[in-house]
Length: 419
Ligand SMILES: Cc1ncc(COP(=O)(O)O)c(C=O)c1O
Image (cartoon, rainbow, N blue to C red; front, side, top):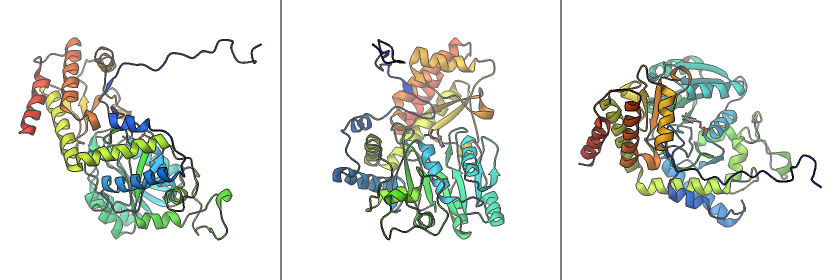
């Protein structure tokens, strides 16, 4: 007899066994083999001394990656958005003012999350494809006197990199905290947390750090931590006599309560969630790989790969999207030529060549492809293979240019860059 609702023969599908694909979009990208190996290490209990040693090592590694002395440097379990949400929900109380820099989809995501925190939002905006003038940020901060200023460093939706250097000082001068989403730039472009006066910075593994998505590194300055701890209200089942709570309003999320997560990552090891052990191994190995390469060398490798992508597509007669002075080095927006079937190009890249390039969002839907060269893929062979495939696909679609032009131009960048 079978249990009602259960079939006699279970449907188990096939084992996951797809061909390896070259991921040249805006993330995720191919995972470094060392990271994959680290993830297969056996799971340990979260209070096992060996595991808590790995946690402390991960904190020390990410201090170096974030270029910070911040004690509070750790991981949020979840994708990059989890850390963004943790940062905003733990700093913003209902009615708090927040100034948000918006020039793309991920600036709008900050506004969307801040609205869910019932904060009062002031947007400082630029059109997609441009960046925001720090003078406009200063004007808004002077006028609004916000609790928090929030910005995206590299907005992958537009491929633009927002200059941040001046904004940290503006925030300090007006006693505002400064949050930055560096998901798409950390370990690929300089993110100088302390030198630029950033209070909270969050990231993800699936871009320049060369890991899978699912763990989000975060760093928090002492002044931001003081504000967050003032809102500490430990879960009832965990409180001990004298544990006490902060005077501030309780943080409106349990999972993303940074005060409780910091207690868990501190020597107190106060239980919160069950740490995602395999993702911690991945994050730790991503940082080790990046630091062993050297951050400067890694930035230079991403810059060279980005230059080669741009030279290649321009030599094919295609146009690169956005303000040339502020392009991200690691993701390039390529304007789809008129008359080309945008989706079919991406489809043929995938079906004929096993290469993924990115589509676009919002006002750029159907208008630009996004080609990422990040992590292990910020390399000559990955860039040249992608350009060669794109040339073949575009030729097949009737877009005329000198055969081999793109690959030759990219090769020249690598020849000159290596000289
Ligand atoms: C700049 C930026 N912020 C945030 C995110 C959201 O990341 P996730 O999908 O890992 O939550 C992305 C993802 O592409 C991103 O590029």
